[in-house]
Image 1 (cartoon, helix red, strand yellow):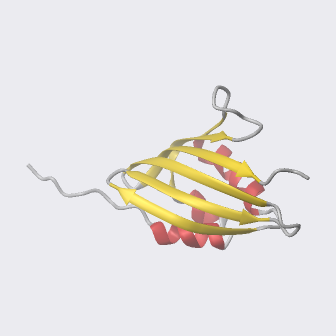
Image 2: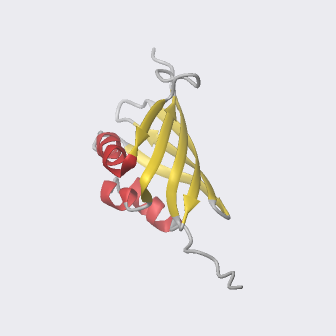
Amino acid sequence: MDTAAGPGFDTEALRRGIEGQDTTALLSLYADDAELRVVDRNTQPSHPMVIRGREQIGTMLADVYSRDMTHKLDRCVVQGDHVAFQESCLYPDGVRVLANSMMSLRDGKIVDQTVLQAWDAEE
């Protein structure tokens, strides 16, 4: 029986996409049937925002990465078919956002992602 490993996840493409605000590069990391859930101050754990499919995920990514802010991939860990990463963001007015993601992969592509986001408190 052949047990060759499937394609790996491209962490450098993830870094380039996040830090270069390149939605095309980021979207290429997702499977066609991917599902993304966002939990934050507006969409809490019992009612997360759920985005299904590459087209809807692409729309969300285009919105996020078109904003006037910087994005940095702080950490990324890949273990088998699971990826976890931390992204820090900074708006020009100094407001910071921290996002942690946990993802499942199939054939090296993201099929399931949960994002937990936290913002600086509004003053």
